[in-house]
Amino acid sequence: MAALVSRPKLPLQEGLYEGLSAVANLHSDTCDLTDPGTPCAAAGILRVGDETVDVLSLSDVTVVVETTEGPQVTCDLRIEDISGTEPDAVAGLLFDTSEHKAAIAALVANQTRTRNRGDGWWVAASDPEAARHAIVNSYPREQTRRLAVFSDGATRPVDQMDLFSWPEYLDMLTGLGPQSLIDQVRRIEIDDPDGARHPRTKRHDDASLATWSESLTERRSPQ
Image 1 (cartoon, rainbow, N blue to C red):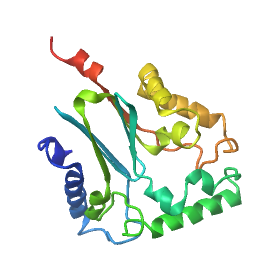
Image 2: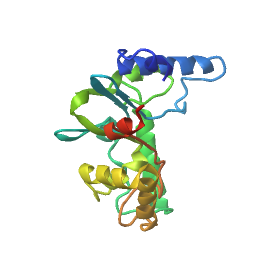
Image 3: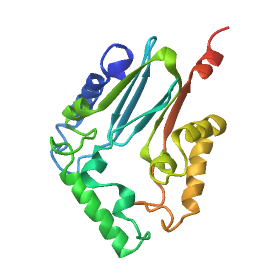
Image 4: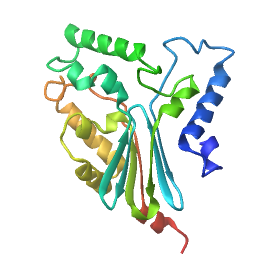
């Protein structure tokens, strides 16, 4: 935020690079930043400018820009290309069984081994170079409508469970609002308590989203 807000023309990858460098420097004297267990996180950025809408995805954050041609989805799925999808890894396995736990352990081990390396996948961590591997896209502002950023736990009904298309999901978000949409995700998960209908690594994943629309901006503008 600090790197990008005051410099609207700075490429998103460079802003993220500066942010990761700053955070790593805060911990370099007290933490072993080369440890494989160093904290990491997916990152998504949506920047609405006067002329363009710029998006960035690093790892499995999904940024959706609805244009006049429909929803344009940006999500960095290289982790799945390298290690396979979570539903595939635990297909046919129920929560809290030894088989399910073993499948998760094998998936995480492979993800950790291939993280932040040239022949693997990239995520925000102590090495700022990851930022330069993020996926970025730009769209003309005049062609955009609804915009949203989702953590992977909030997109489960679309990209893991195949319950909704992106146009349907955006309509739900518009009608329900962010909190009620997440409540709907939780109800779907609760209705499948063992992961039998929708195989997944855990019953509930972190579900966060931010949304923006031109009409919302217009309603809030000074009269």
